[in-house]
Image (cartoon, rainbow, N blue to C red; front, side, top):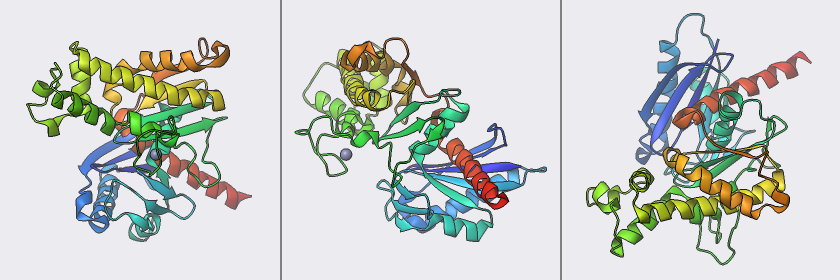
Length: 327
Ligand SMILES: [Zn+2]
């Protein structure tokens, strides 16, 4: 038997099939073509699921399908309430559409909650009871595991780490609030800072690495420049670690997790973030609480974590339904 997981992102659709233990049987990555609107994207999702079903054969019946989406989702009703990076994605009953087309139970989850579940189950957080996952991409997302369980809160949005306010007089965030962590430390902010420094005429190799085209600057390029010893790029990453550390120290005070897992689209640069984050967190904790016990680590599953987590979520959700029927 197998479970299929789909990660619906702004650029790519990632699909995996996993077995009962969570081992990956197959993975495939296609473009999501979000600019063509929800109908095209949904058609692509269905084709990807059918493709995976056909390819992974044998006694591999698909038990359930999980979909991880980047944004606000209604888990109970399987509705994508709002996916800010996907044009036209408001109040779309994705689960119903997929179940009708494919005929297999489907379940929806936020992409970073899915990543958190994957890292906890088969990634860096195995065996850890209480952990926090932070994903830094275009925005900043998060997920919380408490007592081995994914924590959703009352309405399902627990873990929106990026929208905690770290400066109430700060700049406007994409959410409309002011001074959120996301406004200081997202991947988009790294790019803006790099562009600002280049435009100011700072001595930096970032411009050369981006082929003299400011539109080509990515967090990956800024990380590359920092590794080559570029002082401006190093400063951008130092600030990044500092702001992340400020936000994560808040979480440590509230949740006292054993582990913080750092991942997301800029995860390739996250090795240069870990030490700086630890310093900033520890400077802010009372009683030196973080020195011995708190682990701050890089994610293990990379860009496939969301899809694997979606598949695990479908397994978890359908087992809950089956157990309920048994009772
Ligand atoms: Zn915000």
